[in-house]
Amino acid sequence: IATALRTYSQLEELHLQHNNIGLMGCTALADTLRGWEASNLKHLDLDGNGIDDQGLQTLAAGITNTKLEELHLQHNNIGLMGCTALADTLRGWEASNLKHLDLDGNSIDDQGLQVLAAGVTNTKLEELYLSDNLITGAGLRSMSDYFQSESCCLKTLNVLRNDFGDEGAVALADGLIGNKSLTSLCFHPHQSGITRIGWAAFSRLLCDTSSINSTYLSNHNIRTIGHNSSPLDIRQYLGLNGCPHPAIHKILKSHPDIDMEPFFQWKLKLLPVVTSWFGSCRSRIYLGESIHRQSLKNRELSAFYKFVRGMPSLTVISYWQQFVMNAQAERRRIDDERRRLED
Image (tube, rainbow, N blue to C red; front, side):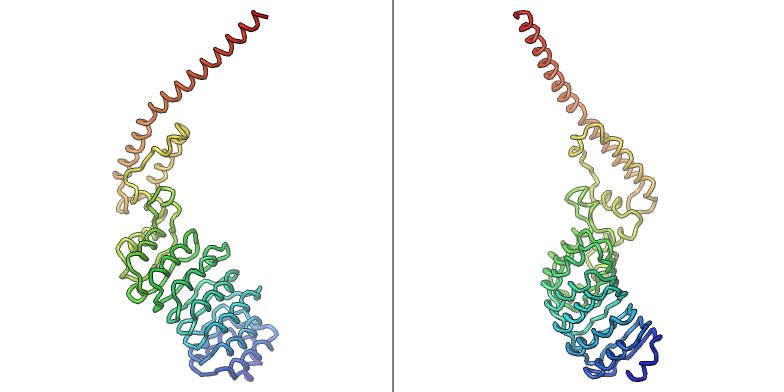
């Protein structure tokens, strides 16, 4: 097959799944890919072919001569050395267009994931499938730098049937703080070993209620975490992420009694900002959504009441500060006048 393919450099898709090509097949295929002068290959499916680390090492050298966008390597025997070879290839492949990488059902452990994560950091990868491997929380922790990098384009991460437990859940939640690309994190809640500790980490990721600013900076992009059997609060927050302006919804949902005292230090300077923010909320919240207009109006009035109620104390303090400053200035003036007369 590899020999025949040498004359088909314009081929865009190649499906060779479940053929048990092994090392010899990978070697022949890599030679063919390297021999194409202008390859248009975008989709390569080698699912279930008994490819081991050595086979992937050989194959990786050939894929850089393609325009590959999808690489399917699920249900093979790829481990640490194979991940290392693939990561090295991706790291040095400046013209890489790879967007879909499927490594489900291999022998990838935490070390393998660590080197792989380092290799995909500067790629255009959008979908990564790692189900049915040997990944634990330590491996998922190694993906934090990738999630936090500005170049991260990953939209889907699939880690089904990996028993990563609370450690992995916390690692994922911490790593995804500030991430703007991921929309789908797929795992089975009952097969991942997550308890309330792990779910609490995901809840904070989606809506950190410790302060209004923390809620605003929460993750508003993810639409899927786990499965339909995820806890109710997780499903509710994910639902809000599907609404226009999710940050506003979460702030109004999580902070029914907005504390204005932290804003008093700016005195009246912040009042127009508060007014503008509530005006923005009114224009973006619709009847039938999570926050009713009347509830929004009540909170606005409550916030203004607290702000105005705090003003008298600020005014008194400001008055006496100014009084003391004026008295000190007058005393300096009198002292200066006395010294002038004495001279």
